[in-house]
Figure 1 (tube, rainbow, N blue to C red):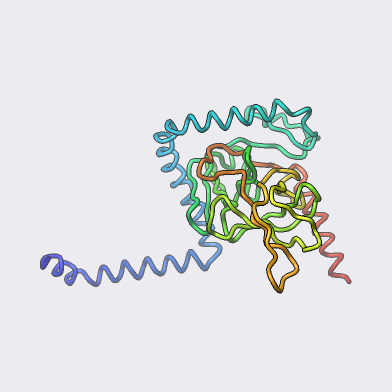
Figure 2 (spheres, one colour):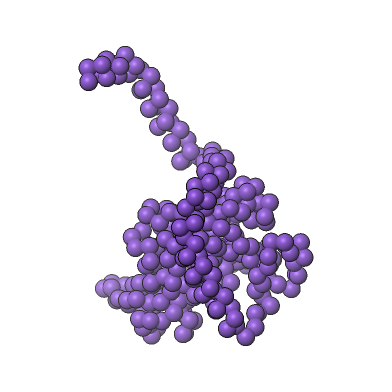
Length: 280
């Protein structure tokens, strides 16, 4: 023990220097958007390779779960009478032959890392810019919305999870089409909250919540979950609605990244609407 104390005393200047360097780097990356973006892009490639190697070892033990999910999804697809022209699933080998009549193109990707126990959770996918993945693309799976792409490298992409207190999506009650904002409170990974639904709307436990389609990120009608509880808080004109998610993020293995072929067109009209409002 004395030798340890002597070693620390002899090298305390070096230890202090390293500590101050770490603190300064943390401040630089946290409070400067450019440096933070560069760091995330470079680190995503490195961590993606590490996670991918680790995932190869552990994925064998998840094969039964993956097979069950694929079987359930195939069963749901077989029950479909037809696929709307606004939606199309295509294999990677046919990406060069996309038909422009389809608004949404879906790119399959495998999850190589995932977190659920933080306030800001992220997911890493094994597809990147060379596969057509771009920032701000939506990510879904058979059981609902997963998140949105934030950073991309040639071979990997980082996704902001729905389990992130800094992000929310537009959702609505399937039975009556009343829409609000769906967000996570940082606690239960299977529970989110729907806000901005006024008291005059009839809301019942068991009602299905779906995406509203009021954005360029997600199509309308993607199932998200069912209402678990409905509360009225004093001093407010809106319900507090707890929604149990269909998706279990702890068992997430495969996802679909959404490419909206009309994204630029929608952004242009929204920008024009914004400019018109500014003239009032």
